[in-house]
Length: 414
Image 1 (cartoon, one colour):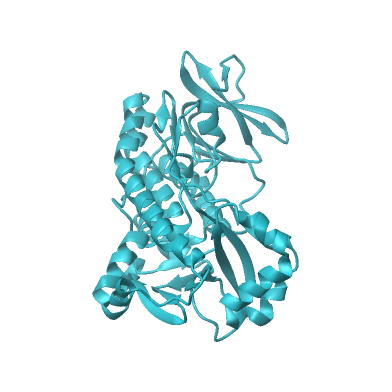
Image 2 (tube, helix red, strand yellow):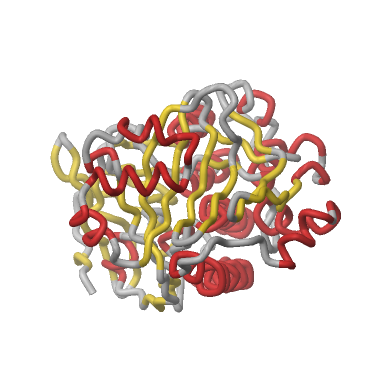
């Protein structure tokens, strides 16, 4: 375990220090600041502008924004609405998920650049004087005092920064520094796939968002207006074999799988235009220790299947704020309060990961191994023929297991 012993002269003191300015960190920071808790969020990058982050805002997140009175303003930002999902199997399109049965204001997925969503959350959180966001603060270690985590050490362009806090929350993703330095035990659930992300221009008449499956290929398309964000699923560790065959061969296979894009695959001019996501599904056995909690991908890395990782992380943040705002504000926080967060979020985490593993092992792997043209299986055809059944995957993907609602209060102005 890599932690530093506490000493005098910390640069900054706060009630809650959140490490990581992703969706979980920013939502938690906003909710706690809104409830009157002093919050510092540390983000290691200079801004939120990065390609191929999860850009889906699910119905349950739209509902959280609605409960905060922010939904109408959020939806003024550029976005695409996805009300239904279809899967093309061997050339046959099958309707799979229908979000329109959900409450009208949340009856879709919004495709919005994550940097726009995070900038929006940051602007709303900055309206509270007890919120502070520090960019380019790369956390390098934890501060420990008598077996309790009491803050973090970070490197900034201005030099070392020490933040002391009653609670440190790791929201720093699947490669979390916080969970590593805290020595929290990770259970690897297993993932047999990786994903290549890329973008290719979109033209009028092209298909909408959805999946494309055929012999040896599994591809997801996200309509981003003037371009497609493309997820190209490959076997775990298969990137070296693909690169060895060369970029022209990869472009040819992509054009074969997506004939309507065949004339545009040359937009991938180098391997720099193809980003590898090494898929991991894991979870912490214990999400906390005295003075420290992990949520989101730091507590449970998810597969990109269904795009539910962001949804789960934001739900974690809402649950954490609901359970912790009062003891944080009153100075009565106990380790048992942190255990309540894990207890609350364990079921949705385990169920979601089990469904992802099932989809990978029984669906993705056989498709990637197949050499014969595919036909939609009978169960999928049943979904296509029965609109009522399409509510099931829409509910799982769009809302998830045990959706959270905002219960933390809005403190009166100071």
